[in-house]
Length: 569
Image (cartoon, rainbow, N blue to C red; front, side, top):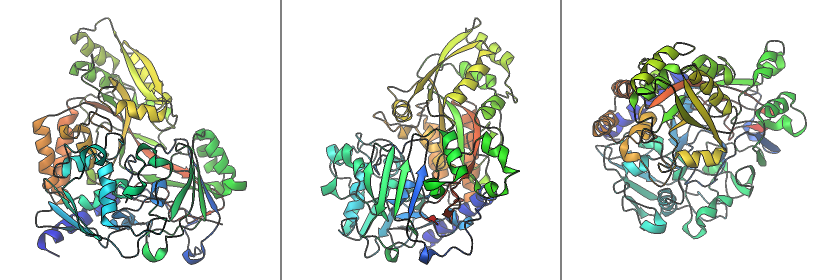
């Protein structure tokens, strides 16, 4: 290990330690994760996943997930992953997956080298080679397959102009000198590269099996399960991959023989079915539905039910996003007026109350590892300040009021849906702002707001941490070099400020987590003055599991059940 390598590793460990201290303390392990659980005898049965939101396009290039134990983790292995072997603080750490280690950087962390483990195979028994990982990553640059993390476009040499393998040929900054070695050449130092290598885009894709936009119907598995059927992400059946074994994957137990994902369910129905825990629902969990008021009301009087509710925290912010290229949001006074008018208490009540959400006035989550720096430039109190909002609107030339459109998802309960939009509409109405609501089905909604040409002027959004640092929280939202015109864009303000870009680069160079956190906190405080977003709340996860589920615990990385460890009785 070189001196530089040691510094990078130490920084990552320290950063994660800070994250788990902040975020993991509230996570509780379920009673089913007990000493009685025997991983050597956990095989068999069918695990059901009951979800409200659809999985979406099940293509590794389009999925915005990392190795945190959700459904994609069961099919797509990546160079690195989160530590799946524990529910303690170490569950937030990065560990090797397809690779032999978490990466070997050069002296200044601008070149990262990985070597593949022996014996890793696709579902058809074909050996996984470094060229398959390179090709999978190149696909994620294709405009036809938008939606993945934007970092590689910014980090890799030549990534900003590359258009994927269908139109752009080979990406020279990813090298495969042999079948087990892959080398990444970056245009700037990035000590966080092992964190990024957990992203689903790092899953191998065999070039001769690539069917473009149709690949999501049957992606080739490198994990413990293969896709047997996929109804557009609404219903997915996964069966055991016969060419996977624990001998080549020490991170996933893969206990059930089959996993069935059912989406598009009403959230109250999901809670009712999990609470009852009968029939197939005894062997069910959810990865996207919080317990509702009816369940919360029963917990103190039902000890058995209370034992099946797990609480977890995740660095995430629900917010209103402005597109300043759309009038009247090009005027900062209008954006400020909306910020003053917002009623956070009514928004939080709309999503279930303080048990599942806490108010936010900063874009960064209120956890030290992210660089949280308290500020509230447009103090609305608990219920808004309509008088101050009217004053700003008058200054902007709207003394007789203003009519705007608020776009939102039609999915209830995810923080971006109609219940939040209605609460915002009511609060802004008190300030003389008439709000027309525009609801769009979830997948179409994301496609619309992730493309600058179709991005609404004001919409409800959320952003969760890709890893415990301010970088992956602020850069995708405010770095002008990450604006993507063809889709998969998260910079809703379409901000391309050279000073902001430079501050992001300087913060990314820091390997001391305390100094990096301070830099990210300063940048968040500076950006907050511009009112490009209106932070609403940080979610708290409380989720049920069925009566026949064992070893169900939440990861301290993302506050969700780790499906790769669960078994059914």
